[in-house]
Every structure is written in structure tokens, then in C-alpha cells.
Image (tube, rainbow, N blue to C red):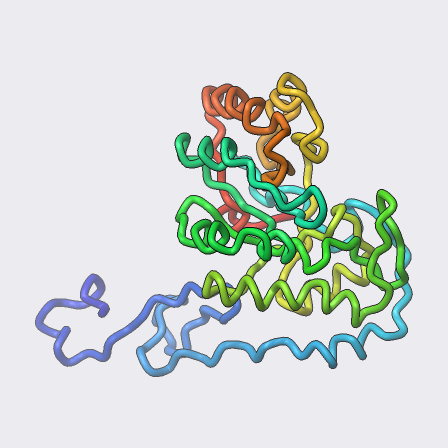
Length: 286
């Protein structure tokens, strides 16, 4: 109700209003003089239609990519408004030797009340369904899309680290969309962020991801090099992150030193005034 804007005596005669904050819907008010974002109840515009994967595949069928790597056009690698904020992101890659759970890391995030974004691959979800459901209810954590088969995202079959990527727009869509729908079912909310397997993609694939309603997210700082770095190097990498950085680490390698190196780094960064945020809590990416 507009009780804060109108006198209490007029409230009974006035229609009810809602505050519109959904990022996919225009917040411009249809009533002249009414503040944007305040919409009369019953006049809420319909949400945009869901993406049509077949139409998207046809749209990009003959488009030739010219970029390949970790930071191609369409990849977000930083926070748009740095402030004193840093986003910690953790991949769960799945597959052989990739289905594990770093319980110490998850416990540390919970104990220190650190917001974080977890990029989950469908294979990891297969191996850890109960934990995935639990993570989806944790208000500190945001679940994001790390693909269906953990493939580099290419429309021409490019490879990264010896892993052959998707080979066509249709395969790009399958890599994104199958796990998108799965995460939507688990969390009740469609995922906003996608990180390809190996974090490599081409700019055409990045455009396809955007048309599917997500954004490709890379990173500014590699915090654990696939959970292979020792404690001191994890700490040094994370503490090197400047405000606005997106830090990539891994939550599926319990034998790694990610948790042990991250804990002192978090303490050190917080002592300088750094705030940790999820990607959706960052106010936009760049």
C-alpha cells in the first residue's frame, strides 16, 4: 500500500500497489507521476517469454567466431561497481576425480558468514544430490551453472587443457540449457550466471548464453589453480585480489589446500574493509 505517501484517511479509498524489482521486467510506472518501480496491483506486466532454444540455434547456425579464451567479448571478469567488494566463486566440476566435496571449505564459509557463488556442474549434482538441495537453501550461497558435461563452450569444437569443446550452436545450447533447467528445478529460480568447463569459450557461444538468459562469468584472480596450489600460494593469490575482483576457486577437491589458504586471506582482506558478495549481490558485472 502507498501508506507512506498518502494520508491514513485516504488509504481505504486507494488501490494497492507493489514494488517492482524483477531485473527482467521494466520498472517504468504506467501511471504519470507515480514513482518508477511502483506498479498498481493488477497492472504488473507479463514476464518475458522463455527462450526458444531451436530459434537460438538457427540464429547462430552460420555465425563464425573470431575469439577464443578466458576473456572473450561477452565474458564478465569483474564487478561493475567495485566499491570495496570482492566476489568469491567456487567451481564444482564433477566427473572422474571431480565429484568430491571440500567439507572444510563449506564449513569455513558458513562459520565466517562469507557469501559466495557456487558454479555446479550437472555431473557433480548427480554425485551429490542431497548436498545440492541443502546448498540451495543456504542464504549465504548462490548456485550458478557450470554446464552439463563440463565442456569448453565453442561452436566449432575448440579445445582447452586437452578437453574438446562443444562443436555447434546446438551443442552449446545443450551444455547450458540442460543444467539451467535442472538448477531452476532445484532452486526455484533460473540461474543467472554460467561458467564454461575450463572457463574457455568463444564470443558466439557467449552470445548464445546471453540469449538463453544467463551471462558468462570468467574471473579476475585464479585463487587455487584447480585446487592444486599449496596453502601459502592460495593465501597470496586471494589477498592479491583488488576491489571489484571475481576470484575463482574449487569446492570439489577435498585434498586441496583451498580452505586452509582462504581462511587467513579472508581475515586479512576483511581487516582492510573488503566486503564479500555473491555475483547477484554485486550490483552488476563487467
